[in-house]
Each structure stands twice: as C-alpha cells, then as structure tokens.
Length: 134
Ligand code: SF4
Ligand code: SF4
Image 1 (spheres, rainbow, N blue to C red):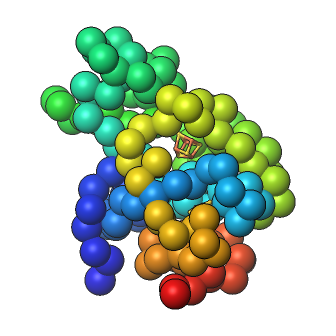
Image 2: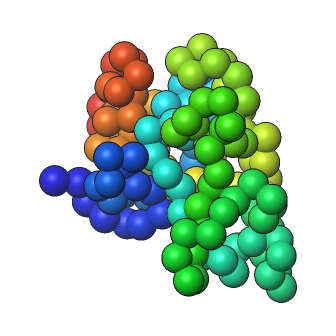
C-alpha cells in the first residue's frame, strides 16, 4: 500500500506519495521514470493563469474543479509533456523552474542517492534498479 501525500498518481489509478527534487541531480537526470509512471496533479492556484501562479497553464489540462494535471505527450501516452530526453538515459524537465510543487517535493532524498517507495516503483516499471533508502 502506497503512502499518500498527494499530487502524484500511478497511472493505474493508485495515489502514491508526492515527495521531492526530481531534477536536477545526477541520479534523476539519468532517470525520469516518475515523469512517465505517474500523473502529476496540482492545485489550480499554481497555474500561471492564476494570480501568483507559476506552472505554465498551456502544459496542463483540467482535472477536477480545483485541480489541474500535467498534459501527456501527444505521441507518448503517459509521459509528461514537459519531459525531455530518453528515460533511463538522460532527461530534463522543460519547465524545471516552474514545475508543480508536487514535482519539486517528490522523492526528497534523491540528491543523496536515496529513493522512496514511489521513486523505486517508477524505476522498476522502467527496468531500472530501485535506489533504495538510507
Ligand atoms: S523515479 Fe526517482 S530517480 Fe527517477 S527521476 Fe523520479 S525521483 Fe529521480
Ligand atoms: S513537470 Fe517536469 S518534473 Fe514534473 S512530471 Fe513533468 S517533466 Fe517531470
């Protein structure tokens, strides 16, 4: 059973932890699995169409009355539209400074080479070994 912190949902429908810094740090720059494995939802107040918001609204679509989600790549279903590069090889987030808070909070220990349950699950789905914990 995954813990729930919100913002990230397994594409099979389960909600899993939101955590920390996806990019940039070396382990994430050679991964990107979570940006494909999970749908990222965000409060609409984070959209740049809202006062004080910062996430490019053009890269999102409505999700619920109060939330939006990152759009999928038009040719690569399930993959966040903002993800650039090859998963498991070299990736980057095209909107890194403006990414949703759910992204900036995901898997906070990757900067130290440690994953968490959601990170490890995403990596397994892409044939990458889990980072494991501290
Ligand atoms: S799955 Fe884990 S290691 Fe891979 S990009 Fe996401 S947070 Fe980083
Ligand atoms: S906005 Fe950036 S960090 Fe967040 S899921 Fe998309 S590519 Fe990954």
